[in-house]
Length: 492
Ligand code: BG6
Image (cartoon, rainbow, N blue to C red; front, side):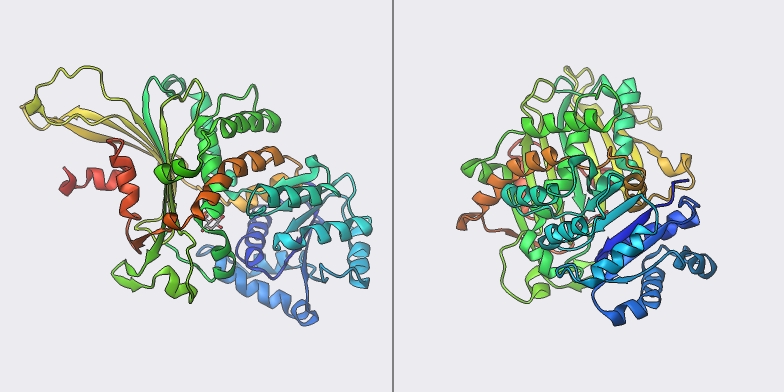
């Protein structure tokens, strides 16, 4: 159990607080992970909102907790920890003094969670500092988007850095809080069978794909200014790429892991101007069908014209010894056919075919690591058809569903990360140098996409994205791999 701490949420009535932060704290309470005396302090801008907060947040929890998780008795004991406070982040008035007084009477361990637009991060930190609330045992958690390019990210980081030192700044990427994502390191660095087959000598290509079925989800204001590259690639996809490609850290410690990740980001081959056209595809969904139902296109949802991308595919290269000439294909999109986050490691073909043509096609081995919705690993091997007396070869999927081993996978990335911040463990948070290295690679892509010829390609909602993304891999004699489609009877 953690020591008691004060968890202050700036933006206490916002989407993030409702959907993720309060449910995460409720789960921690139900699991008995919160020390006695822990307080949750959501800040709100209107007095009425403060009065009505308990009902408001309970209703939100009922909506956003998983089915069967909400329990009225548990909630009532949890609600006693919640102390909403009236604070206008932007104006340093007596409300800040009330907040300061309240906090100074509580635990010395303070976690300030800035669940607000980055535009107010600086003011908020300044006010915290002027109120004398930034002690050695205080830390600040910041959410993405951390800027929209390197320059703005640096400006935000410098502003926060005026008040908190780097050790106190916890930059969240919720993908790193997913148990399945952490398991990538365990899989790689504790199992010889993988690590010995993890380089350019054995691997033909790597695909990292996060497909979503949701559309704008009422976040038009934010999303249209960001797009898929900033929203998903700069952070989540590049973090996954780092975990797949990094060298083994000397030990499992925040600095060592970050140092290895930064090396990968720095080794990413820069994409500039014409290279951007050749190695990236942007897309935007148009009306289509999902689960048999018509769904509107991005522009219909948005209600205005826009060239923001809702899909990205990138052919990336990591210029180092281990990964020389191995393409890393990255893909993410909204309103795609299926919700799935997975990593495909495709091995090279065998060097010599000993079986006759009549035995059938040889398929390369593939390791599939699915992070969500199911947590599983699959190895695709070629086997003799055991039911036939002829020599017939076919691809067979060896399945390891983690749910069979771990019967109660109840992961909650936000709970994990909040508990880590409260325990002052920065291992799963992003260092400023990582943010910068990621933006350094992303910025030229954004710049080149400003050119009129780089407008997004249309793709139907409910598809796997634009044709151009398929063509990019076809040029390399490869294709995006989808295990269900690969093993379905029609495909064989
Ligand atoms: C967020 C993005 O960071 O991640 C969203 O802003 C996206 O646009 C979400 O939907 C995906 O997260 P998950 O955990 O549902 O895969």
